[in-house]
Length: 131
Image 1: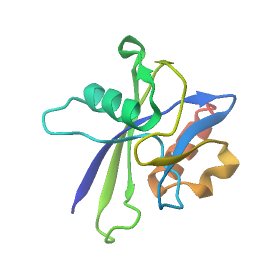
Image 2: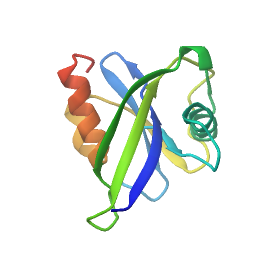
Image 3: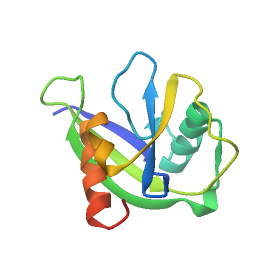
């Protein structure tokens, strides 16, 4: 079974979670992406967030949240996405960059706009009283 291994940053403010939509896509995803060869979770996350949102994550504040799996959107039925999630503080102003067309703060009621794995994370956050 193919697995797409990704890293995501969960930034929550006022019961809303930061989400992004890539150019040419209709679905929102939590910011992050795939590791490059030899990268640690933290190195990949810092690089991806800087590329996508132009902010610097504060390494000493990063905290592992959990790892979630679901059917990968737009892939064959046996392809799974594994999302390893972290939270942490940042410096700078959030701005769409690189392949990101839109930044949005989504509430739990907006979860249907998100990818399958993000919906699972939304539900987990809701059950933990975070959203």
